Image 1 (tube, rainbow over the protein chains, first blue to last red):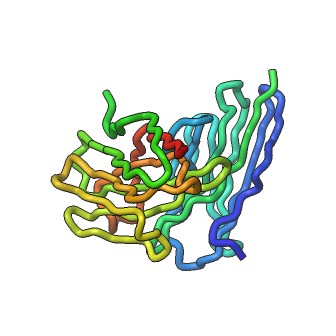
Image 2: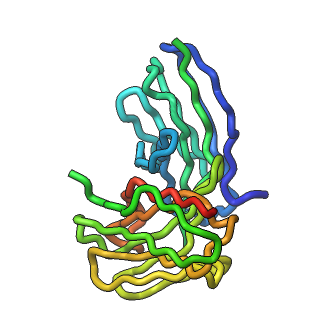
Length: 107
Length: 115
């Protein structure tokens, strides 16, 4: 099993729809979790940290399920500007990036 | 204002010709990281500095070296670039290494082409 695994997509979603994707991780001792956004040919930028109790930032909701070892990202009322690659990042004694999930919001 | 700056943004070198990529930060962060990212792949950590303490990843080739002369600057040296080293090189910083929630700030990257 890969250390951090994501569905590569692409997810093609109409504008205004809700989209969710998951990320699974293999090390049950992982301590912290993040979602980063990366636009084409640009650097990753932190979207949100993922806390045990789940957290929300505007249209974005992140959740952690330690029992099943996955984190999720939910985007509501998607905008064209949400089109990007979403990278899952998991930290145990090192920082591990997933390969990312590509999201295309369609007008 | 840019907080993590990388120069140059695009670098072309010849096979086997040494190249140095530069990263500077205005955040006064203790930790600086170098990642290699190839197309459609995850960023791969090459090494990081915690202050002056150098930490190499086990699978980073010897061809890749790094220097951190002071808190603000960190360099990536590729001694003999091969065609397989063509990639985006990302520099990142974080305030600490041990904090559980420890955001990394990335520079814009240097895209390296090897001819």
